[in-house]
Length: 288
Picture 1 (cartoon, one colour):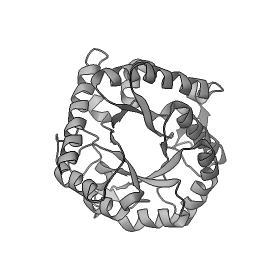
Picture 2 (cartoon, rainbow, N blue to C red; picture 1 turned 30 degrees about the vertical axis):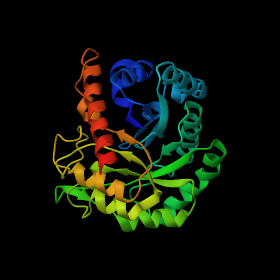
Picture 3 (tube, rainbow, N blue to C red; picture 1 turned 135 degrees about the horizontal axis):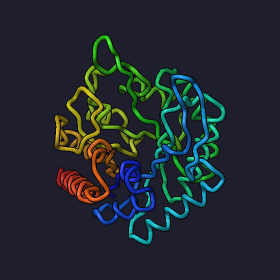
Picture 4 (tube, rainbow, N blue to C red; picture 1 turned 45 degrees about the horizontal axis):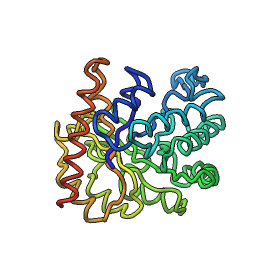
């Protein structure tokens, strides 16, 4: 299936309308973004509850409502993204991550992307994932770790972070060694200057552990989150690598910056552009 995250569209029209727009644009599925579930201020280290439906006692009902809107419009939820940025080692954050997994199940999704702690060891992140996995298993939802990055101000480029290269990503997966912990490869992150890796290299390293994608383009330096084929990433090589490992997951776009300056009136045309690009990637994969 081809899908896209709904946070960017929801910023303009709310989640309910965002799903309708994603369906009208021609996508098969929607990626449940849960960034409004909580708020954390990194400067003051203060955590605050959100007044969004996902932040309250009606979160599951809200997820079920979104699922039905999708079904009424002919699309399904394929995966989700747990709230970030937030320090995943805080106990109250863990509770919200569990809620995100449960909301994923209620929406019909099968994978919930949960970032590792950028600066933690594979063993420390394994403790976090290990706490969440029994809950994920009971919900029938897999957790997907994602390749991350830090920014080196002095060198003006990306720097090491959890899962950013094949060695770190595999170390995280092996530290847990559970079929319910899989990999989501962020194609843009894998092509950032300073990390010394590439999307094809990570694809081949992850093999059948790779079960979800975040597809977007960049200048092979910054985390631009632009529409594929608009910048510098070679998606021909990406698609060939996915074909070579027998990738069986979906093609999920995360082009939030492409939609950032849209208005409600131009939002649908932007999503249609993205759906056309996703179909192009799908065709390339089938013909590779």
